[in-house]
Each structure stands twice: as C-alpha cells, then as structure tokens.
Image (cartoon, rainbow, N blue to C red; front, side, top):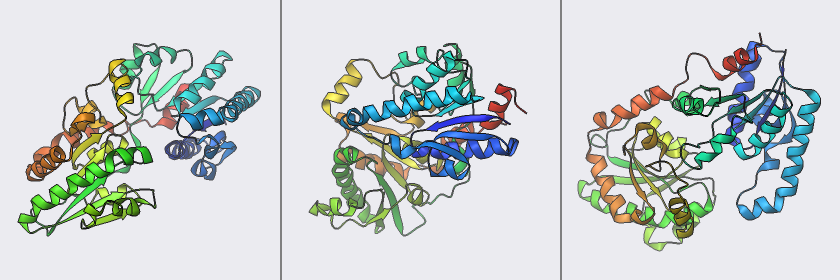
Length: 374
C-alpha cells in the first residue's frame, strides 16, 4: 500500500487524475490518495485538502488579487506532504504551481512525478533547465518529449495522449458530395477575449462560404460549441449574420464528428480536429502588443501555431495567424478544402492518431515500477 499526494489545478487535470487514481487502485485497492482534487478525483477516492475551484483564477489582475490565498494553499500542501511523507507527489499539469512544490519536496527526498510535460519545446525553452531540480519522473503526452528531456537530465516516459484514447480511430466521416447539407464547425475560442478577437471575422467567412456554396443548392449549417449562454445574443448583435443557419452546442465533441470542415482557433481543439480526422483551418489573433512581445523577444520556438502541424512537421492545417486572419482567405481555403480528396487528406491524421496512442504500459504501471511498488 502506498500514499500518493495528487494535485490538479484545472478540470482537464481532474479527468487525468481520476483515471490515474482508478488505474492505481486496480493495481492495489489499498493505495491512499490526497491533495488538490476536482469532483472526478474525489469520486475516485482522493481526500481533498483543497478543491480545484480554489485555484481557479484567470487573467493577470485575478492572479494578483488572489495571490496571497494561492501562496497559502501552496504552503499548506508542502507542509502536509512533508508531514505524511507520501510515497510520491504527483503534479498533474498546472506547471507553475506544481513545479514550485515539487522542487521543495524533492529537496526533502520525497519522490516527485509530473504528469503532462510543460511545452518548453514550443515557448520559454529555458524553463526546462529547472525541471531536473524539481522532478524525479516526467510523464509525457507526446512521444518526442522524453528524448528532449533526456538531454536535460530528466527521466521521462511517454504515456500517450488521453484524447487519442478517447476518440475512436474509425470515427465516422461524412462526404459532402453525398449529402444534402454541408456542416461546418466554428470554434472561436473558450475564453471571452478569444471570442472578441475571432467571432466576427469567422462569421464573415461563414457568410462568404455559404454564398459560394449556394450555387450547389446545398444547405450550409454552422455548428458553434460554447460554454457561454450569451453566445446566441452575441451573434444576433451582428445583424448581418442573422440569416446564417447556426446550431449551438455545449461541448466541442458534440459537433465535431458530424462536421465536414472545422474552423478553429489554435489550441487543444486543433488536436481534437486532427483525431476526429477532419479537414481543418486554424486561426488565431491576439493583441498587437502581446504578438510583438512573443515574436520579437524570441519566446516562441516552433514554426506553427497548431499542435497537429507541430507534431507532423508541416502545415497540414492551413493557419491564418494575426495579420493573415482575414475572412476572405479563410473562406477561400474552406471552399478549396471541401473539394480536396478526403482519403488522401486523412493519411497523415491517421498516422498522428496512432503515434499518440498509449504504449503498452500506462501511467499507473510506470509509476508503480518507478517507485518499486507491488
């Protein structure tokens, strides 16, 4: 029997943490778990010292406002961990918070495991130089990361990406030539600031796409997944879009499988699009100041904005970033993609899906072996 302190800071970490706890309990039902947990982790038996909601802050001003509380939580987690001397501290993503705790605990000979490698290979590469002093084992979602970490002196293992397991290899595909309508998913972002930057231009492109496809006599339906109840009101505030046929969904996954084409802002949704094996266009715009700082200060280490393009090493998904983010270019690319041979387009996406699936040993087995537990 072992005691694990497991700390997640976001809902996505709660999902990963719950599965890890469940898998570790299958190996030994007597294992104990405590830390910072969400509802899924708690349901699996993790004793919550704090809940994920206690760490949920967004934006610089919010972080500054709640910094004393966050630092107090951090201090408590360190003190409790030192007191119980767990077999391992497992930080799930949320790197800035977890790495600082892991560094303190590793100095005290407590084993530290970080699940989800910070994307140092994409930006702020210098962060990786600090991993060795904080982490005993890094569990990576991408197959190329362990080799990069080896050069930094960090022991690491590839555990597969959870989305590659969740989404079926043979997810259904529609053929726009065989059906009455064309379904296009529009993903302007999950944060209000992203929506402010993206929504109107994406909808302008939607009008152009609809108008160009009207000569085929096919109905064009646009899907928009969002957690904002106000989305329909925001769309209606632009009267020029009132005649677009739009369906609102709560979850991204609810609309991707039935889409013929996806127009999405850069982020995790691009990887979902690739794993659902959909023709995809990637967009992103931020403030001019932020873009200037990212590019001119050499904080970005990759040639592409979207994960599939980074992983494949080429622009499989056409990207319209910052000054290139214009409705006409997006619409023209959409019309071109709808005419591209689907089978040929899917070949690299199928290979990517295979590469991201879990190896024979999952995270729980790797942790058990690493710690020498039975």
